[in-house]
Every structure is written in C-alpha cells, then in structure tokens.
Image 1: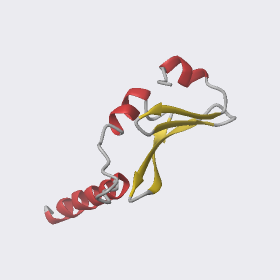
Image 2: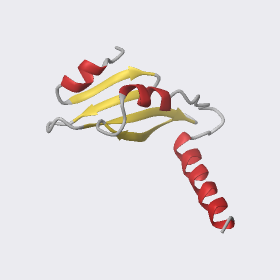
Image 3: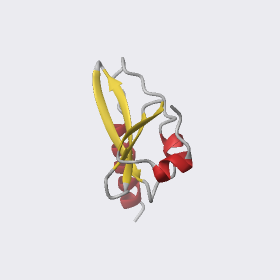
Image 4: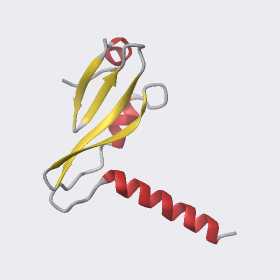
Length: 95
C-alpha cells in the first residue's frame, strides 16, 4: 500500500509499509518515525530516517530512492556515516 499524507497524519499506532523499503512506525502518543529496511548479504538491516515532524513523506521517499545492492555489501547507513566523517575532515583541514 502506498501511503498518503492524510493517512500518515491520522494513522493509528502500528507499522505501515510504503514500498521500496520505506516503513512508517506510528506510536500511541501520535508521534512516529520513518525507517528504511533493506537487505545486505542476506541480512535484514534498518536505518532510521527521522521523525514525522522533521521528515515529510516526500522527503522520506526521496531518501530511500538510493539503490541498495544486497550482493555487494553496500550499506547506506555506513555510507552516510562515512560521508559525514569526510565532510568533517575536509572542514578541519580547511582551517
């Protein structure tokens, strides 16, 4: 089932799949978070994308548009951390 903004806002607590590994996890208090589920080398992985107040449905879908190659061992969560570390190193080197 593909989610829409109205459903995301009014959904009862639970887990809802949008497709391409994107999952909405709604809590009892009305809050929720976006989770990206993918498989690498036969193992299921999950990467948090952000909370409902910070990340819209469109932004979450854009975020999971990254292709995941489960056979090569590419992990988007590690790639994101490595990119952040490279940015920090280059910023420190510019001082």
